Length: 226
Image (cartoon, rainbow, N blue to C red; front, side):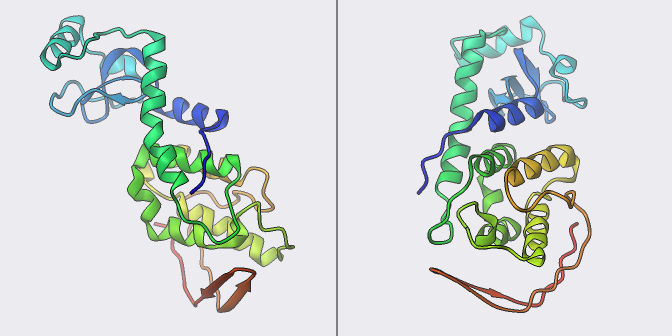
């Protein structure tokens, strides 16, 4: 189990894409939300946000006060900046824990940028995204990690780029965010995010690779990012 904390780059990426308002607003499903995407409840539905700008689906003061009273929240709209910061820390904590709990190949660990990118993905998509075949395939490859110190061939570098692209191809409606997460994941590595998410490509890998303390079987496979 790792013990990373969310870094500045990761926090800024999440905040950038979640939007922000000290006032209560409806999220894309109409659920009342505040701060950086902090869900207040799913028991009430208001105006759905279709633009990504919280100001376009703000609750009226009367609606906010009634919601606060019905749920006994202890706060109403607008909240303080301090309250928003607390919500953000609490809301990201579960995503941070989920990524810290990942089991990685023996002897390997994330860079801070890799950790931050996966926390952003998890915060947005839920911890189940870490169990998808594409994310697991990426994490199973020891070449992905900064702790792999041996030289990589151009083919191995290219494979890393493809695995990252595939892993972050999650939710076609959020391709801009996913590309930014993938770019952050690749920061400082020998490979880059040269394949945007949802780029179709074929990958043919055959044989066995043995790494110290790590054994991986590659088989013939064709990927189509859809």
